[in-house]
Image (cartoon, rainbow, N blue to C red; front, side, top):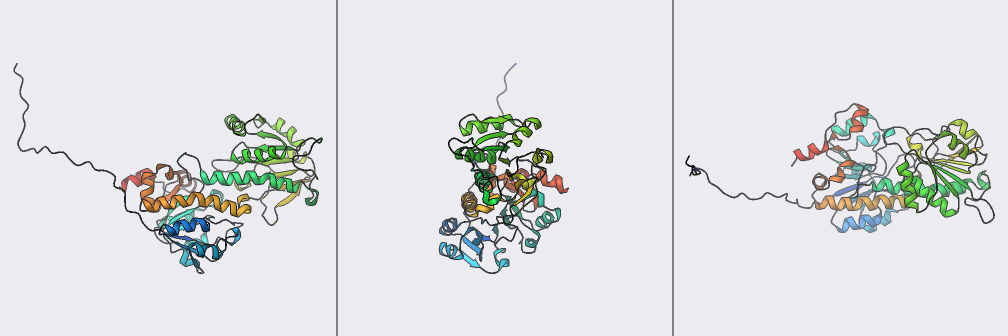
Length: 404
């Protein structure tokens, strides 16, 4: 059998094609608005004067509402010297294509929102309503939430910073309310030579629990940590660097420890919905009079059955002789530190977005940022929110790919 030679037709033209590369878009100038927050107990601000100075020197325009940073002790003068424009009309701030809020979007904001705006703010799941989301969707808003924003390492930088502040603050609060001046037991948190150390129980071995444990140990207290995740307890011990008392949440053991402790901290977290109640009213009634309960997880319902929301103005109430401190937004009480922490995460993000020609282009290159986007040009891209409010869910990866 004779082998046929390959047939080459003259009608084909065999040419090498150019390789098509993803061309980096031109950088864009951002107009950023920072409104004054009117939400309950919100003292933080999303950008510090130092951050504003960096953004202005990179050619961006920033409008700040009059007295927006007042609660965090940042004056209008600080911002105007950094190059920002101070505005007295809230509506003018809301005309900026990019908004940075330190509190969630509320109903009063809806009439001021513009079409195709980008909003960087927290979202409080417990207070969110379907009507609010629908109105934002109709205005084709792109929403980026603080809580779900990830960095290159896959961790949540703003949540981590706020948790570190809350954890560190917890022991300062406990020390304050254990003193006789605040009707506490009159004991010094930590104790001194020759006197047994104060007992601190921490529920939850997350970041809040870890930082609360560090602060308590540094003061010299005896610390016992409870969590149902053994891996979290292991991680806490590794991070602290030596073995401390840890246990899974077993009601009998927990009840026994609560009877003899001076401070109990609730720092359990819940990924979706309410925090589980692990300390019953009966357990609280058996605690020593004058001891202190600090429920950090009160913004998700709290993990003590006796917990009720309090405010920074009236932070405590007494039940069964036990002082309860249940302020939901603890980092807001340390507003300047919290503002700096938020600003440190948002400023590089804004600079990167401008270099890439906007957030739409940035999320194409930086895949880890996609977890922070709950709404993209009016399409709801957060699965939990779509399930909860029975709204149409759109996959963000498909949306971004379809725009290329």
